[in-house]
Length: 368
Figure 1 (tube, one colour):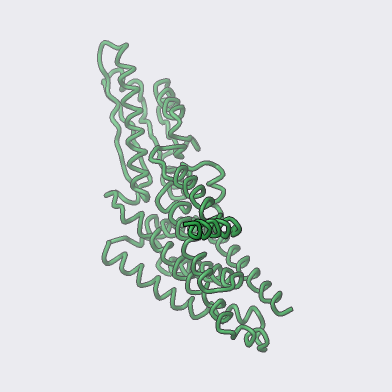
Figure 2 (figure 1 turned 45 degrees about the vertical axis):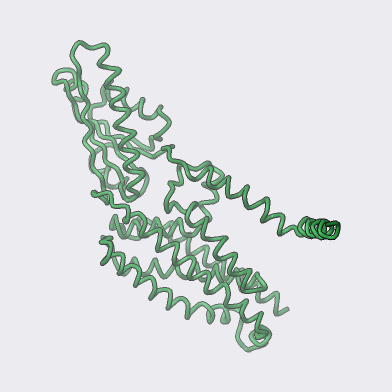
C-alpha cells in the first residue's frame, strides 16, 4: 500500500509540474463554461430594428418607446419611406422593420382596430421567429393596458412578413454555416499537417536548402489543397441546392469566387499552424479542437452575435467564418452583389495576407 501511495504521489507531482496538463485540467473547463454560459442564450437582446412611422402620432410614438424600452430591441434608424425597407434589410443593418400605417391613432379610436406591419429578416429563422413573437407580445401588452381605460376595446393587428425565407426553413440557416465549418476544418486540417509531416519525416531540411523561395514552398503546399477544396465546396453547394432546396438567388460565379477566397484563408491558416507546431498530432489537435468550437459558437452560425457580451463580440470579429457566413447568406438568400459585402471580403483578404506573411517569416527564421 505504501508503494502504491508513493506511486500516486509521484503522478500528482508530475501532473503539477506540467503546465500544459494543468491548463487542460483547470483552464479548459473554465473557458468552456464562460463560452457556453454567455453564448448559449435563448433570450432576445439588442436586436437591431428600424421603424417606419407613417402616422407619427402619439400612439405610434408610445408603442415605439415601449418596444425600445423593453431591452429586447435596439432602434438603429427611422425610415423615411417604404423604398428604404428592402435596402436596410439587404445591407444587414437591421433584423426587423416595424411599420405603422397612416392615421394609426385615428383608426384605432374610430374603427377599433389598426395595423402594424412587421417585416423580419428570416435568413436566421429562429431569431426572426423570436423577434416577431416578442414584438407581438409587446403590442398585445400595450393593447391590454390601453383598453383598461377605454369603454370600447380596440385591437392592434400585427401583419407579419418573413423576408428571404418565408417558410422559415431551418436548413436555409444551417447550410451556409455548415459549409463554413466543413471548409474550415477540412482545409485547415489538411494543410496543418503538411509541413509538420515534412518535419517528422526529416525532409524539411531538403525543402529549406532547395532553390525554392519560402513563398514558393508555401504556395506549392497550398495550391493542390486549394483546387481540391474548391471542388469539395462545389459538391456541397450542389447537394444543398438539389437535396435541401437551398436557393442561390445571387451570382453563382461570385459565390464560387468568395468560396475560393475563404478556402485560401483557411488553407493559409492551416499552413501557419503547421509552421508553428512540431508534430502532426499537435497541429491536428489545434486545427480540430481550437477551431471547431469557436466556429460553431462565435461565428454567428447558430447563436446571434449581438446577444453576446461585448468582449465576446470582439473575439467574434477575428473569426474568419463569421465573415464568410455573412457573404454566403448575402449571395444565396438575398441575391446581393459585391457592393453589399465588400468589407467582409476585404477582411478575409487581409487575414489571408497576414497568415501567409507570418508563415513566410517563420520559414525565413528557420533558414537563418
